[in-house]
Length: 77
Image (tube, rainbow, N blue to C red; front, side, top):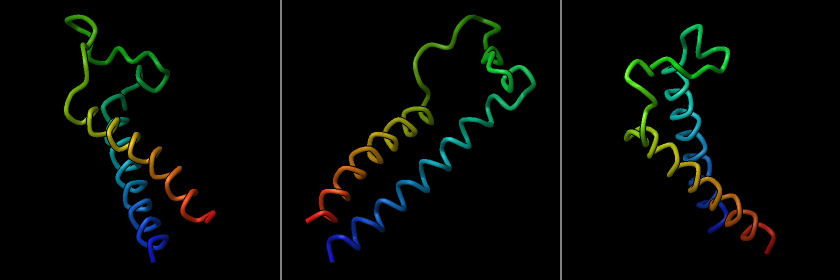
């Protein structure tokens, strides 16, 4: 039962992470961002720190990483 719950939570976190990464990528959807310049919003200098959306993306990535180990550990037992 625990394995099923962990797999469901893992799937939800994976879906949310994919959604947030796609939202982050839409910021750099211009032609310069397509080639990796990342200078779309640098009129007044480099962007410092992460906005709220970036912090959520990082938190979901860490949660996904932890859930990968936890799920594999539970399923191997």
